[in-house]
Image (tube, rainbow, N blue to C red; front, side, top):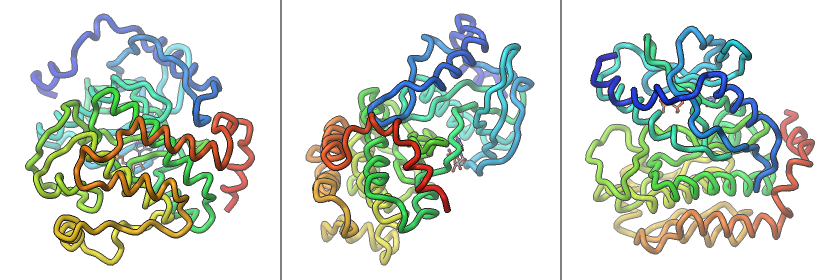
Length: 337
Ligand code: ADP
């Protein structure tokens, strides 16, 4: 790791608390506290420690493949306790640009503490591979869940997934974070199936930005102004959120299934075409998604409003989501196959 990279994340560490505080904080988050959607949250300590040692992290098994290296399930150990965590690694050979991106992801995530945003616990940078230590989400991505439970996921669970994602996104919007890659593949599930917004590899703290880089853009999730002028804002996340709602309600279906990327782009921009939502989607959600797909970004609702509206729809149909905590058996039943 070269010095200039180090400078970008070696900050304030001498003020940080010890790893013990971090682990205690993490253990506290395991104590059930009911929240709007039944996920767990406790206020973290003010400043969790940040830089971890490699020898405190023992990888256990591979969970997935990231853009720059593997993602592992691991055990984070301190003098007192060991806790299971997820570790995103970065191979030694990657470019300086990728390394900076990895650090930026960590630095941005570090500011967030929310029950529907993946919590970062620290970063290990003294050896290779570099490691980003995160809260473990054993349920896999929302996309893989939808595909695995095709035809079996209840409307209640689908609405809860979009509701919880909107809660995390309303928080990010408030913190002026643009995610830029909202999709069902980038929302993870905990063991108890709470949704966590994940993968901040593309995220940014500016209000709007233009990004000319063309590498692997997820065309079918992009707003028209992003496809056309490479403009990103919270409102482009709102558009992508609409596409994600389609993914969830179609049991993990591909957006615009009959169209290629190029055809999608042309139909959206030239013909103002919009996808039809699957038949059983509640009318309130259909209306909301159509607003997320407004041509003009300023006509799309903010996530704060989206969350409010989804919450009232959930309450109307299924009761208060806070009561879900008491209903864990329901989840287990859905899971049986
Ligand atoms: P990248 O953005 O570098 O491509 P991702 O963030 O998409 O990497 O992670 C790659 C895969 O690793 C994910 O699809 C998921 O399967 C797994 N993964 C990532 N973060 C976690 C986590 N916190 N808990 C469990 N699995 C995770």
